[in-house]
Length: 84
Image (tube, one colour):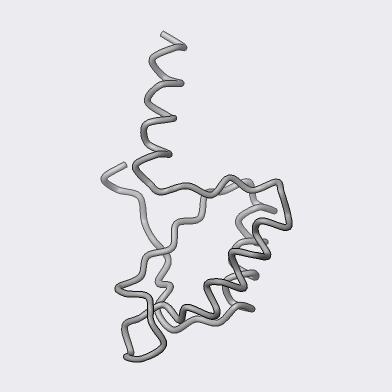
């Protein structure tokens, strides 16, 4: 998990979030967003209202697993252990 790349989430809008998510789903890929802070000011911040709309959109899809990176890592580790 130490080499998982994150997509910059600072200052992007809901349309960009959604486009990136749809692209990842269609390609069967992971998508990891990385941001510095969550607020509505500053150049290095995730805009709270845009993130909220995106999260509501994701919840409405119902076919995307959303979790912190450490939870995904633990899940993958457990799967690999069970397969051995």
